[in-house]
Length: 367
Image (cartoon, rainbow, N blue to C red; front, top):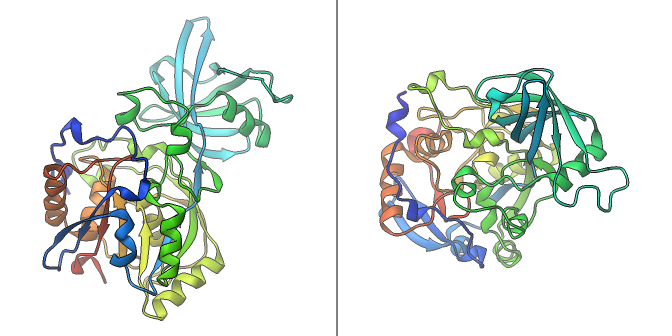
């Protein structure tokens, strides 16, 4: 399938650089391919009335770590400033990362990372965080072996790292302390993501309480979102695109709750594409969700038959991105292009800090 089919023009003025102070006041575009009307405008707090009692929201409780590190490579070739974004942990001391400029790195190079306040309040961390480049991959990917491991490494990264804002935000303003709160869901628990599951940024304690009062439960899986989610699709045909793997987990108790909900006639509402991808990875041919723990690199494009998810809540995505391909698979390519055109004309705010969609499926996307 040609990647050009998923292209569209987005004015820069539609890209949100900050979230709203009231997260639940974001706009919410409901997209129902079989509905009349197909598109309807709401606010996110109205989600309570747009869903049904008995529905089950499945959200991603991963917590974003400050995974952008700035360092210096010193070798006989000279000194070079290097920036890396960690995107997948391999073991207690090894991470996969995207490096810039990667062309300045060779296997065996040592990078020293340091940040403001390094070493303060942490007796185990002196302020010097070093890593060796053990391997180089495609698209600027490197394997880093850190001198520290486990919780000591985690503490060091927390001191020297920055919140990894997406390039469409970080390229237009510096990261600041407010992002440490803004770029985190209120239910984030398990550290390991290097990008936020942004559909969840709209939820507030009051909204969660209102959903519960209406008989709509919320449960949580974990998928540690990687920086690969922001990588552009550089091939001409989707068949040639390689997804980066991300680690996720669905507990046996959660799988039972999801399957029981569907058995009782409730719908499974994925909060974000990350939740959807893990649910679809864990489902069998009958749509039954199995317990899951491991990596997934599932790539969903139009023609995919969704087995585990009935409704999707998601933000607005980049043109030519794997995420716009996914929502096109869920609600139909033509329908989603019309929805995005409507959103642009109606001044919806796009991307991570922007507004949201409530997507119902194109009937052809269901088995």
